[in-house]
Image (cartoon, rainbow, N blue to C red; front, side, top):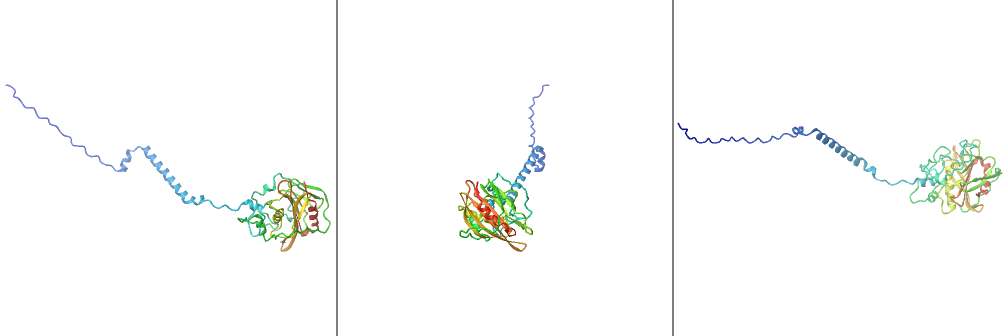
Length: 335
């Protein structure tokens, strides 16, 4: 039996259904797929950014005003070279903070060699220093510089220091002066003067070039002082004005509250050198009682540098030595 012809069977193709759309997972669920090193770096970077931002906020809030420049205060140098004026509590002593215009008895060591420092007085006054201490242990008042006013203007406005009189000669003091022998040479100041052989005792000079004091008087708290140095204040155009400022400066070496009354104002000659002399009394109170010291300041022009200053003051408790003032002034010579 012959095989019957058959038709080919149709090809059956089964179509696969399309894949379902991806499911969106929450952000926190997807963090698990991120490497941990990336997470750590991100955390560290975020913390650093927050720290920088916080520091910037703190700077602008608290540090802005601190960086704002303020006006400068008065110059210390001016207060150092300007003698004190009443009512001010600022401190700036041009030299040492020890009152010696009438030096407290027992406060100065005896038998010390006379010191001659190589540093100039002008250098020592260019730095700030404590206010001079008065004999009563209180700081002498020092004037703060006033803008637009010179040292001479301030001195003329000081009620402790009256205006200088017309030329007036220093009177000769009665009594026998202390004997002298030889001369004292102040090489730093460029001046020489008679050496007293008795009574006046040489003591440590610093910051002066030379310094001598009288023995303490019984019942007195102060003693006489004789000192020399290059003038420690601003030099003026006229030597008379410089002497005026120097006399005012010597109030640092007298008791607090001292006032000046003039007894002499005259040109002088030390050898062939020109100079100016001021004589004055310094009035003050000690223990509620009125006292006075007789004093003199002499300035002598020297070939180089500032004029030489010679300062002597003797309290009323030692008035028998007032004649030493005349001896000293008449013996001045340049080196």
